[in-house]
Image (tube, rainbow, N blue to C red):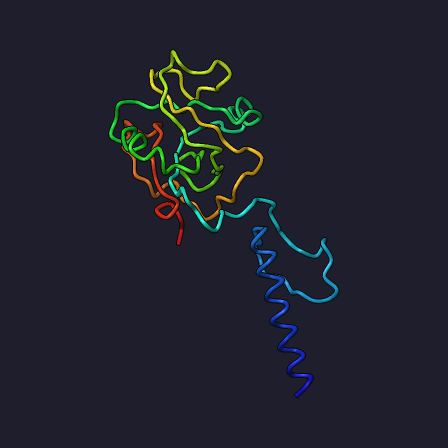
Length: 187
């Protein structure tokens, strides 16, 4: 009976440790927890931070960006980017929800290659004439931009986000869009 209680307590302790690991890391396959576990024994653990548990601004600014690896070098160090918006229904939806945008998602209209970041502060609309010269423009064919400051110190885990859940037309395929984390989550 004492042995059974000890085993049950160890299982509870192991589950608590596993939950703690999952709260800080993405674990892509199960592994056994025992007293001999070494750091090298933990398989396929990513270092992306999880989404914050309490989301006060669940809005997502979705930015279609092909060649992210090349283009991101222009803004990741500063976190300053200007997202071009046009006079379309999607862009006006962004403007209507500015105060609720807490994240920016760079994507290519597929689940692979998505990059999710939190915003440092509320983004705001500016004309191309009033845009800071050190702010990278994701497009140069528009007169209106969202001035966005991204917290690039941490890239959030986008593995549960599906950018294809937000529909677009052929004409607006490359335009920025507004969504919420809830509507983009795979759950």
